[in-house]
Each structure stands twice: as structure tokens, then as C-alpha cells.
Image (tube, rainbow, N blue to C red):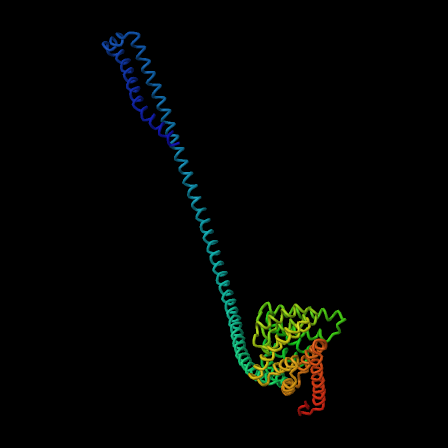
Amino acid sequence: MISTFNTHFVGARHAVPLLVISMLLLFAASAYAQDDATDEPAQTAVETLSEEQLTALVERIENAADSAQSAAEESRGAVDLGFNLLGLFEVFGGLISILAIVGGAVAVRQLQSLQNKVDTSLERFEKDLTEAKQRFEIQLKDEEKELTSLRDQLQQKAEEQRTESSQATQALSVMTVGERQYKAGDLAGTLETYRRALSLDADSLVVHYRLGYVYTQMGELEQAENHLMKALDIDAAFAPALASLGYVYRRMAEKMPESKIERGIMLARAEEKLRQALTLLPRLVDDDGESWWGSLGGLHRRRGQIDDAIDAYKRAAEVTSQSSYPYSNLALLYLMKGEYGEMISTYARVEKLAFREVLADVDNYWAYADLLTARLAQGKVAESEEALESVFSTAPVDSPYALESLLDTLGRLAGVLKTAAPDSAKLVQGVIDRIQAYRSEAANVASNGNVSEPQA
């Protein structure tokens, strides 16, 4: 639009000179006409013009008039355009003023709305902050209570552990006393001492094991099994408890008739436990210092597996080479196989080893039992009598198993010697009778509450 206005303005500016020239020409033509009426020479001058020149002059005047008219029209158009533009400018100015007013009002409203939102956000923020602070204070109090409770629990636990540690230490001290009682053959006193240790440390692996072992020696196999199982509940791989439990099962099986299926099942359980223990600790020994391979050898012998029994006792001899126990059983197994010469030489070794043991420990009942057996097998009557007296003096009164085991060994020895050495068999049988009489008298003394020793 501005470009169009400039075009019309320029055209109008060029039209003004053309308009002036046309007016001059018209003025000149009028003068020529007046001169024609008043001045003869002027008329003569016009008349002197040729027709072509007049035609050209008239065309020039007409063209000038047309140009002047066109210029005038363009000037009017330019003026109209100017007025129109001026009107538009006024309209635009009004619109801009209106838009400014409306925009200002909108801006004010937006500012007010923004201010309201800011105020609302601030109020919400302050409210959220207050609630968060309250929650934090509540949580802090709860955590303080929890920490206080945890601290109290830890203090209580530490106190309990100190108490348990102190009691465990006392239990171990008590156990030491019980071990000395056991070595002296006082099984009842040992049992009472171990019970005291158990009251101080109810979850002691060793106390349960020792109780099980003592109960076994006293023939109370169910009680023994109970404590050994508790020991294994604490430590399922505790080899001494496994071996002891296997021995308990063997003793239970021995009390069953050979015809019962349960006997075979119980012996299988016994072998399983013994082998588990010996797999863990091949050189494991019991509380009497004997290899647990000997118990496995006794199990095989009761099954009639003589070669397996010999192999087990040989392994026991490797573990406890200075003990008479494995060699005494090996000698009897050789005799059962008819190897009389091997039996005699082995019993001679048993006598030497057992004699050394009793010199080292005059209260060693099991060494005296082996010494007695070895001398009887060799037909040494006087020496056998001396060993028998020591057996009676050292036999645990409250352990029926001690004499039962010796009677079992002597009975098997007498049975084999009936053919190989009848005189020795009679000697052995005479000793068996005396031991049985002693055991019966001891049982009577115990039942009557008499504390005196039975007569040998």
C-alpha cells in the first residue's frame, strides 16, 4: 500500500510542470487571437504559419491538456489515497489503543491469576512442609524408641552371653571333675557331676556326648541314645557322638534274639553310624582310649564275618599299638579260625601290653581283664588268679557291662578251647563261675543298699 502511494505521489509531482506549460500555451493562443483583432503584424504572423504547423501546435496543446488532466486526476487519486491512508492510520491507531487497553486488562487478569496461583502454591507448600515436619518428628520419635529398644536388647543379649559364657566356663570346670570320677570307676558320681554341668550349659555338645557315653557304660541305652541324639542335633558331624550312637545300637541289637529281623536292622544302623564316624576321623578313640575300629570289629564278629572282624581289629591295633584290647580280640578270632599257634603268640603279646598298662594305671579295669584272658588262654593258673583279684577290685560296681563283656569273652574262649586245649577250657570255665557269683553278690549288695564290697 505504501508503494502504491509513492507511485501516485511521484506521478502527481511530474504532472504539475505539464499543467503549467499547458496553461502558458493556452495563454499564448489567447494572445494571438487578441493580436489578430488589434495588431496587424501579429495576425500576419499567425497567418504565416502553415497548416501542418498549426496542426502540430493544436496537437501539442491537446496533449498538454490531456497530460494536465491526467496529472490532475492522478493528483486527486493521490490525495484520496492520502486521505484513505490517513483514515486507515486513524482506524489502526484506534484499534491499537483498544488492543492495548484489552491487552492491559488481560495482562492484569493474568497477573492476578498468577498471583493467586503463587499464593495458593505457597499456602500448599507451607502446609506440606508443616505436615512433613510433623511426620518427620513422629518418625524420629519412633526411630528413637526402636533404637532404645534395640540397645536394650543388645545389652540384654550381651549380658546373657556373658552369663552363658560364665556358665559354660563353670560347666567345663565341672566336666573336669567328672572325668576324674570316671577314671576312678565312679560312674554314678560321674553321672551326677555331668548332670550338674548340663544344668549350667544345657546346649553343650560335649556334656550331652559325655552323658550318653556314661549312660552306655551303665547299661541305660535309651538314656544314652537320647543324649547322643541331642549332641548330634547340635552338630550332626560330631564323630565321637556318631561312633557312640553306633555302639549303643550294637548293644541294643545284642539284647535281641538272633531270629528277630529287628536285630539285623539295628546292627545295620550301628555299622552305618560307626563308619560315618570313622570316615570323618579314622583314628578316633573313645573315652577309654580305645579305637572305635574295635567296636566295628565286634559288630562283624557277631555277624559271623570273621575276616572283616580281623581286618577291623588290625586297624584298631594300628591306631592304639600299645593297647592290649585289639590284640586280645585278634587272638580269639585266630582261635575261632583254628589258628591255634597264631592265637598263643598273640595272647603272649596281649599279656605284655596289659601288664604295662596296669603298671601305668593301677585302676585300669580293662587292662586287668585282658591280662586275665591272656594268662588263662596260655594256661597260667597262678598268674590268672592274681589277675582275677585285680579284676574284682577294679570292676565298676555300677557298670554291669564291664563284667558282662569279660564273661562274653571268656565264654567264647572256653568254647574254642574245649577242642584245642580241654584243660585250659576247664580253667577258663572255673573263672567264669567265680565272676558270675561275684556279679550276683554285687547285685544283691546294691539292691539292699549295702555300701560294702562283695566278696571275691
